[in-house]
Every structure is written in structure tokens, then in C-alpha cells.
Image (tube, rainbow, N blue to C red; front, side, top):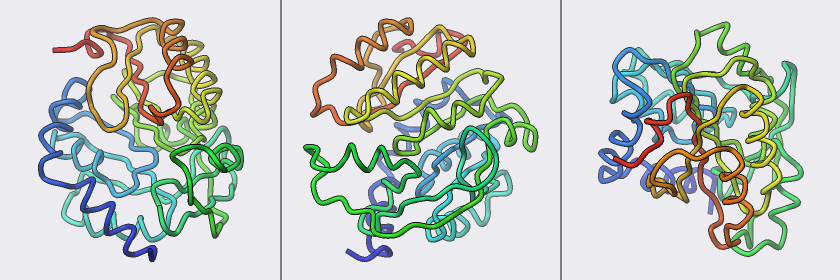
Length: 250
């Protein structure tokens, strides 16, 4: 599959109209009109579009050139949308992004992620066939430039702990993606969030947008849950918030 065809497939899947009310209803627990959201690893912008529909200002970070071009078209009439074409990490500078032409969703700056995916069930046939060197910023630098966000979404294929290492002040809430092929990255991310003062967590498997726990749990319970997940669970997102009410089932 060509890169353009793969992006088209992702656009159809993630921007499907049926998904919009689910996403909007979920993220309204974190955002309101006038809020500020960071979307780190914006991909085709389905989360960013949801944040914008809610009325939030959106700072979207997407390093892949072709996806960045698609995002500029998708959000060309959205004045509250700002695109930053960069990687995000523990420090400012440069980093190498490895591209997967057939599956742009899993572009990564982490060689450990690529090694973990090699031969893992559910990751068969994934090939990172190109790379580019790009600027690297930090969450702290983005906060200095755009303000403290109310919510930060992080989805960067095994680079989540690196992104969180560049954050020194906690926002009201955030999420980071985890995979069962790299549970250590999730553990390091949880440790960093605990050091930043977060004490309330919940999670969603895959694209379910459904809480794994009926109410917020502590970091130790979340860590155990991640360890005990079967490999076929594959991936999901951990959410952290300063207010536990945001992480409870309605």
C-alpha cells in the first residue's frame, strides 16, 4: 500500500462520522469552550478535531511531512488550531523519526519500539522503511510558547516516557498511549507522572473510549493492571488527572 493510500485509509477510519459523538462526549470531561489542548502525535487529527468541536484551542504536534500537509488542509478553516511540525522529547534539539510507509500511524522515534515489534503477535509485517531528521521540542517549551494546557494527549509509539521527561509542571489532565509489547515504557511514564504529583488514573483499551475501572485508581493499581493485561490487549491509553471525578464512569 502506498503512503498516500495508507493516509487515506486512516482518514476514513478515524474521521468516521459515527466516532465523533463518542469522542466529543468523552473529552468534554477534560475540556470546555476556551480550554487549551495539546495533541502530541496528532496523526490524522481525529482527537484534535474533537477538541476543536468542543471549543478548545488546539496545539497539534505532528512531525510526519505528509500528515502535516493533510492536517493543514483538514484544519484550514479552524483559527484555533496551531500545527507544530516537530518531534517532542526530553530536551530540545534534533531526533530521527522512523517512518512506516504502509502504516503511518506507527512512525516512531524509538528504536526500542521497532525492536519490540519485530516478531510480536499482532505486529507482523510492519516495516519501518525510511527515516528523517527533524527538530525536537519539549512539552515545557510548548507551554512557554502557547500556555499551560488543560489536557495533553500523547501518542508517540514508544516515545511516551521521553515526552513526559520534558514536562516539569503538571497540567490538569493528560493521557499517554501504552502497548503490551513495551510495558516498561508505560511503567516509566506512570513513575514520571507520580513524580509530577498525579495520583488519579484510569485507562481505556484500544479505541473503546470506555473506562477500565469504574472510578479513578492509584498508580500502583494502574501499574499492576498494565502488567497483568494479556498480550492480545495490544494497546490503549492511560489517563491521569488532578481531579478524580474526571476519571469516573458517568
